[in-house]
Image (cartoon, rainbow, N blue to C red; front, side, top):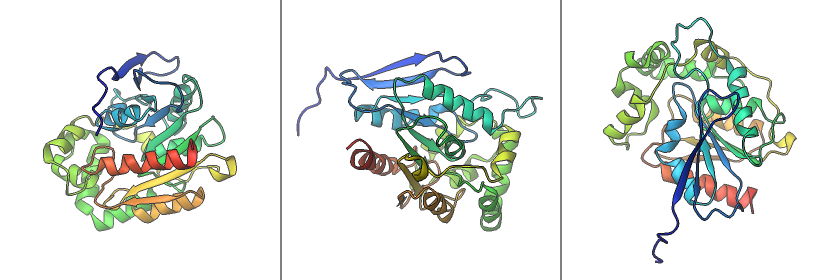
Length: 281
């Protein structure tokens, strides 16, 4: 096995982007040759771009993909603020981040972020779209009902998070987001970074959206889900894949927060393999 080259390291840069409340964090190999497209990571509800710093930014930057993450607007706002952002405002944030990059990126979006990214298919340039634990085009109402029936305590705890993450029970939240394999302290570290979510955005998330099929717009797409996802059932994610005529990958022993779960690397490798085989050649 060859030794790692000490002259190759990851360089991090923060960019101010007009129209974005947060900075755009970029990570790339010091020997980046520009032969791979950038990857833009989009977080979901109750979270920030920081969730990608657990593993995914380093992993994809080390694989040669310049990697970027950012916060959707309102991450520091109170859930009781008079002006609340909606999904269209989040879509504008993603569009601003895409325009700031040197070329159309591979967009990797999680959960609510996946729903918003789907709204941009055919409207902004994307090299490819990867949907992780995504809300399907029909919205999350069905998933909510299923969770309320199957996991009532977890559903109630999630509702408390909608008001204020500090009110939620960390053990219950961990059970909702992660597989049984995750280390407790890792899950707690992830959950401590949770933030309040816009009630307006959560309401809009319940309803279907007008979304173009990725295949119809010639956008390569992949849907990937965890077998232990309690928030967005696997069959809902499979419907999203069918809608876009895209491949679906199910990973065992993986929960909703797949970018930080114990088997995160299996997920990352599956995405990288698909990108190399079906997108960049």
